[in-house]
Amino acid sequence: MTALPSSSEERKPTEMLTAVRFTVSFGLALVLAVLGLALRNLAIAALSFTPLFYSMTLLLSYLALPHHEIEARRGVDRFRATEGEPIGVRVSLATEKGSYPMVFVHDELPDGLSCASGDVHYQGPLSLSQPRAALQYTLEGRRGVYALGGVHALVWSRFGLALTELTVESPVTLRILPASEKLGVIPIRPRRTRAFAGPIRSNLPGAGIDFFGCRAFAPGDDIRRIHWRAYARTQELVICEYEQERITDVSLILDARSRAHAAIGSHRTFEFAAQATASLASSFCRQGNNVGLLIYGDVLNWVFPGVGRSQIDRIHDALSTARLANKLAFEDLRQIPTRLFLPHSQLVLVSCHLDEADIETLALLKTKGYSILFVSIDTIPLESDQLPSSNDTALAVRIARLRRSLYLQSLERYGVQVIDWNPTAPLAQAIERTRRMHRRMRP
Amino acid sequence: MRFVATLLIVVGLGTLTLVAATQHDIGIAVVAALLAVAWLTAVAWRAPRVLHTGALTLATSLCAVSATLHVSLAVVILCLSTSLSAWDLCLMERSTSTHPHHTIYRLHRRYIRRNLAVLGLAGVLTAAVFGLRLRIPFWGAFGLLCLCFFLFVIVFRRAWSLMRPQPEAKEERAAEPPA
Image 1 (cartoon, rainbow over the protein chains, first blue to last red):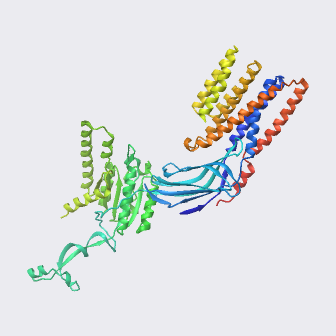
Image 2 (cartoon, rainbow over the protein chains, first blue to last red):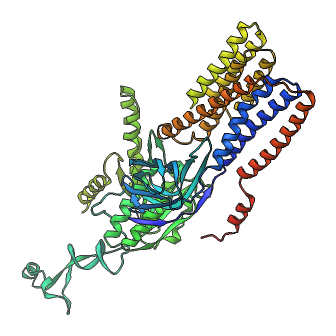
C-alpha cells in the first residue's frame, strides 16, 4: 500500500452560513427590541428574546468550535487498473492537537468511479483518546483518468449549533485502463517486415517453418535442405526454401470520430473499440512487433511506435484518455496523416462504421502499399436486443445484415482484411474465425 | 430535517391560525395559514435560502402584529420559536444536502435535538421575561433603546469579523509557493 503524505487543510466558507444565520436572527432580535421599545409594547420587546437567545447560542457555539488540524492520508493499492478491476483505497484521518466530538467525513468520488465495497463515509469522534479513524473501500470505474481530490469533513461544535466544513487535500490520480483480452495469432501479412525474427510471415525465403519454394543448389547452401526426392527424380540438386518469420511495424488506428460510433442503450461502441485496440496492441507487442497508435478524431494523438511491455503501457495510457470528438478537420479518413506510418507497414483500423469516402481512403492506402486490417464492430446484435421480437424486427435485422455484408465485401474487394466482431462475444473468437477463413482461402 | 421543519411550521403557524380564528382575528388567521402553505411549499421544493429567510421574516412580523392584537403571547412565542427552528433546519438541510441522507442521519438527528432544545429554552426564557410585567417610562425606554442599539452594533460587528473568512489568511495562502 502506498501512502501519499498530504495534509494541507483548507477552511471552506461554511462559516458564511453561520454568519448568515447569526445576522438574520440577530437582526430580527434587534428589530423586535427596537419596535417594542419604540412602541413601548413589552410583548413585542419580549419577543426579541427568542431570536436573541438563538443568536447568542450560535455565537458561543461558533467560538467553541474546534479549529485543530486534521491530517488525511490516502493510500491506494494501485494507481492503474483495468476496467472492472477493484482498487483498494484507505483514507486514514488523524488529529494530534485537539479533539472533534463529532465529525462526518465523506470521500467524494468523481463521476465514473464507484464504491464497490466498503464505505466512503465516516461519522464519529476524532479525539485525543481516539486520534485515528479510517475509511476503507474498493473502487471500480469506467475507462478514464480520475483525480481524487480532498476529503470533505463536516465538523460540529461540542456545544450548540455551529458547524464548519473542512476539505483535507489528499490528491491521488487513478488511471482506469480499457479492459483487454488475450488474443491468439492475428493473421496479418504486411509487405515489409523488420530484420528480427518474429511471428509474421515475411514473403522472403530463409529459415522458417512454412514451405516457400525450391531452387537449384548453389555452393554454400546447407546440405540438410537438399530435396533428396527431387534429386533422385531429376539427378539435379534442389534446395527447399522456407518462409522467414519476422517482426513488423504495426500502426493501430482507433477511429474516435463521433459519426463513426453509436450509443445503443447503455452500450457505447467507442468503448468496445477502445477495448479491441487495447487487446490488439497487447497482442502485437507481446509478439515482439513495433507497435504505434493513432487516435483519429480529436487532436493528433499519436503514440510513437515502440516495442515491449512499456509500449503496451504507453498505448493503454493513451487509450484511457481517448474520447470521441467531432472535429471538422478529421471529419473523414482522407486527412489521416500517412507520414506517421512506415511505408508498406501494417495498418489496423478499429471502427464501428465507415462511409463511402472512408472506404475509398482505405483503398487508396492499400494502393500505396499498406496492408490493412479492419476490425469492424457489429452493432446489429446490440440493436436487435433493444427491439421487441417480432416478424418486422427479424426482417429488419435480416436487411441490416445484408447491407452489412455488402459493405464488408466492398472493403474486401479492395484487399482490406476484415475482422467482423460481434461485441457480445470475445474478440479472440472473431479473430480465430477470420484466421480459419484466411487459411481456407490460402492457395 | 425537512420532515421536522415541516412539522414545526405546521405546529407553529397552525396553532397561531387556530387561536387567531377562535379570537375572531380573521386577518391574522388567513395570513398565517397562507404563510404556512407557502413556506411548506418552499420546504417541499427545497427552495433557496432567501425564500426561507423571507418566510421567517414574515412569520416574525406576523408574531409582532399578533402580540399587539392581544393574541395569546404563549401562542405567539410558540409560533416564533418553531418558525426560527424550522428556518434553521431548512438552512442546515440545504447545506448538508450534498451528502447522502442515510450517511448523515446521525448528525441530522443530533442537530435536530440541539436545535429544539435551544429554541425551546429560548421560548421559555421569553415567556419568563414577559412574565416579569415590567413597566418602563418613556425616557427609560428611549435610553434602553439606544443602549440596545449600540450593544447590538458592537456585538454584531465583533461576531461578523469572527465568522467571515479572514482576507489576510487568503493572501497568505495565495503567497505560498505551490508544492
